[in-house]
Length: 93
Image (cartoon, rainbow, N blue to C red; front, side, top):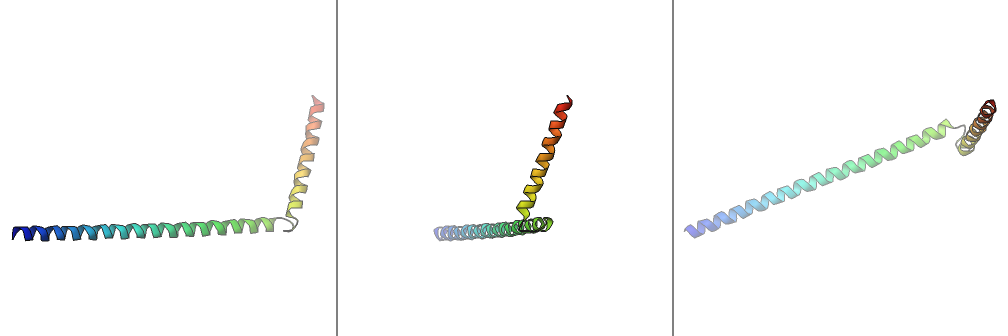
């Protein structure tokens, strides 16, 4: 009788342990899925932000197709202005 009881107790403990392990695995799986979903949402949000920034840049320039030309003109204008300013300063001293 004692041996049968011990065997039954062992089997019951093993079953409980298996159930606990299974629950832990399920919880880990759920956490992993949640994390993946959060990452996906974050990527989508970043993508949307990038698209919005690009749209705003296109709207800010005089025309979307000539955006590079406009920025280059502005850059050269500034370089010329700075160069002229530096030359004038160097003559004073």
